[in-house]
Structure formats: structure tokens, C-alpha cells
Length: 210
Image (cartoon, helix red, strand yellow):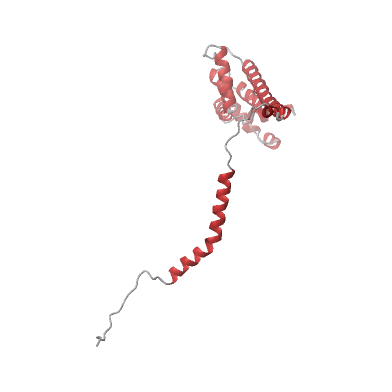
């Protein structure tokens, strides 16, 4: 099983049958390293992490493919690893790295392990922010329930937005009036369509008046 998984890793076959039935393809791939590099380049460029829940899957697949290339230490691939994350989260990680290194990220000196550590720390910070916001929202609701009418009893009236009930009632009345008179409007239109009295033609009488 270890042999077959390694073969699927490097060849890119989908099933076990493809690996066992393609030894010649395996031999040709390793005879031509440029073909293999082009394949890994295409895979790495199309590899994305749409959600942070898929980060472990993204990390494992990206590192396996990038370490199979001779240029895996290049700054481009390290930057591409961050860019493949969700857009807003990737921008947040890049800003964190810039703050840590005076607006210039030294990708050459950073290892993939260092980048993963920064990503994990930033992910935990996002989780903490979300928990804080949720807790703050619950605290506001609880404090409102605990206060009750305390502020109003001491003459402090809470700020409320203008009521929209009047506009809603006006809309309902106008719709009701339109529906009520719609059939009469249709009858009037049909009547004028059948016989148009806007144009009248008068014939001159041939007989002269006596």
C-alpha cells in the first residue's frame, strides 16, 4: 500500500488500477523531469483553500507537491502558499508578516514551518475575535434584560428609530383602493377599445333643406 500511495502521489493517477496498468507511463515520467515539473506547477497553481476548515488538507497537498520540485525554496512558492488561502484571511496573514518584518517579508529566510505557525496563530486570533463578538452580543442582550425599565423609571428614554407603521398603513390602504377599483378601470378601457367615440365622421346630407 505504501508503494501504491507514493505512485499515486507522484504520477497523479486516480485509482489503483491506473497505477498497476501504467508502468510504462511511470518510467517515461521520470525519464523526462520537465514533464513532471510542468504537471506539479499546474497542480500547485490550481490548488486553493476555499475555507479554513480545509487548511490541513490544503497544507498537506501543497507541501507534498512543492517538495517534489527542485525550486521549492524559492520565495514565489512560499508566497503562493499564503495566497492560496481564503482572500481576506490571506491578506490578514500578509499584514501580520509585514508588521513583524518592517513591511518587507523575507521569504528566503522563512521556512514553510514558520509560515504555517504564522497561519495557525492568525487563525486562532480570528477564532478569539469571533468568540469575543458573540460573547459581547450575548452580554448586551443580558444587560438589556437585567435593566428592564430601570432607565425609564429615572427619566432616561432609550433611543428608538422613527416608526415605519404609518408608511406601511398608507401602502396597505393604497393597494386596497387600487384592487377595489381595478375592475372598473378595466371595464372602462375595454369599452373604449370596442367603440372609439373620440373620432366622429358626419356625412353631408344630399337633400337640401326646404
